Image (cartoon, rainbow, N blue to C red; front, side, top):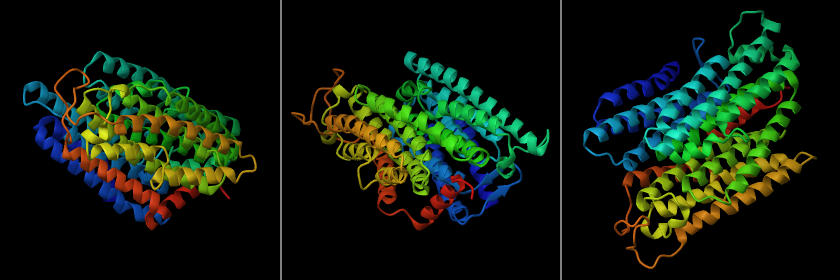
Length: 496
């Protein structure tokens, strides 16, 4: 098992270097192979993590049940996004197209490498480094199309995310200082060490560190009010990168917060950490729900949906019931599949209509006989409709919230999610189901007529995989996955 961890950390990096020098057609193949192999390897590790065992490689790499949840989500999106990108990118054979292809596939693999490494590294300092690397790589990918809008979005992302990670670094230093009260001035900042001594850490120092971590990593997670980079970056980035940003990067930032949460509940008890997450979660969900009612850009719509779901995760962690924490971790997996599939569908729609304007997109199901209905299904999945995984995860979260005698937060969660449902479902049904007079229609931008047919079979395949995963998570998650989520939820619960 240790060798698998080494392969997961090394393989995407090696593939990224290879993609920069190889022809684009070969880069596509090895990227799909790398993403698929990474997901298969994470599934091989899953039973060990689900059986209460840790896999450790030296002092740098470690996987447990909690990190395994986020590794599975990340590698799943790595594989499906690689398939989608092969159909989405239409690169010319001239020098410009070849250079773009090499940069894109090298960047995509580097981005996935950094996100795969983040849940595998052992320690708060290494985790901060991994998240910082994701910022640098993803900012370059946001700007890769070299438009004014993409460049502006990238700079905004760099400035806000760097400020947030600066705060997170300060939180890391403060947590290290808290540990000196137990371990002395020099010790290893590994998770095992910190969790072992957390009960004796100075409470006020841990309290400050946790707030800084939530604010800092919450910037990358997309929590309000430090979410402002997210809609622009998701809208202007190439669609494969948007899918990874929403489905994987935000989750990795949430993972970082959960590591601080583990320490905080041992040092402070559960009340303070949960109250902090509840405040950020409600603010994020309320803001996103209202913004979802007034969007014109299809990718910005999905970006605000990401803010909504990050708010749901934060609120879910504020509930004391173990079933709610189980639901939060299931939500991480279901959101990764749903948001990836939704962005794949949006990519197909944008390629077909050559516009992101929701008011200019009509009759998507007629023009895109496969990806159109699947895109609508992904929108409904994000809206927590059965039988998809997000319905199950949100049901568990709300059930856990209602177990608390003070269930106001659970009621607010239901109300705000309902508002978000109306926004998502309205625009989804308008763009996909509104009738058109003919299957051959004038292009929204005045170009040639639009003809019924798919953009690429690769897009259809990637979406089918995502929807299949959502149905499995919603109808009957595998027993080994249920054990993993139960074990991970136990690691996040209050110590007995």
